[in-house]
Image 1 (cartoon, rainbow, N blue to C red):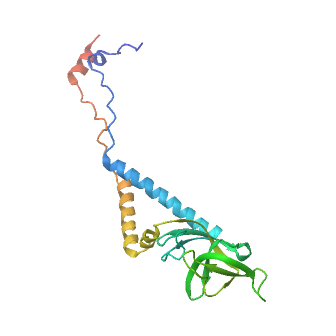
Image 2 (image 1 turned 120 degrees about the vertical axis):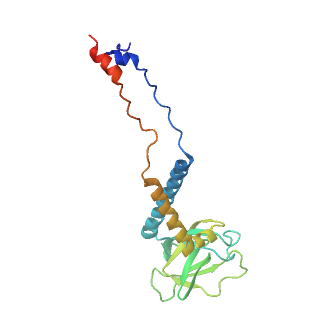
Image 3 (image 1 turned 180 degrees about the horizontal axis):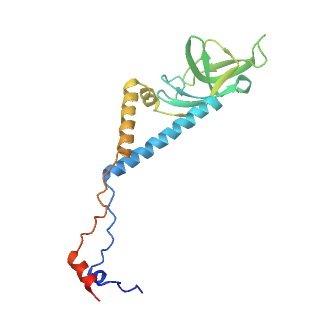
Length: 207
């Protein structure tokens, strides 16, 4: 049971019910969603950067269909670096070629390099869509084996590194941060109550 009013003024003044919660505006919801997406993307970039350094992980983009249908043109693959001694027949690996682009094909044969280092291997490869093996074997001491691939995203990843896209992302991120931390005036702040000289005088004059 609530306590009785202590003064006549409190008895006369109606109790103000609590203001209902104001619904969030669409702008705030969009900003929060964009900030969450940016946070997830940033976390993924950090994870990928750490994996690149610690696990020798790289992203390989496929512009041709030599590995179709296993890895079609336009796909992107995650490849992890391993010593050549761990390569097995049937693996899909990426081999670096001095002065040329890397090549990613399936291993068809593995053998020691005659007169080479103990850890080196001579591997023969062939694309799944090719009828014959590559013209020459590859002498390697380390390769990158494909872990998994995602079709169709190579053009997106390739375009993401172009200057116009990087500039647009920078501007959007700047606008998002400024919009989130820009000071706003609170519309639901309580207003000070108006004074009531007559009522105060009546209260003070009451016995």
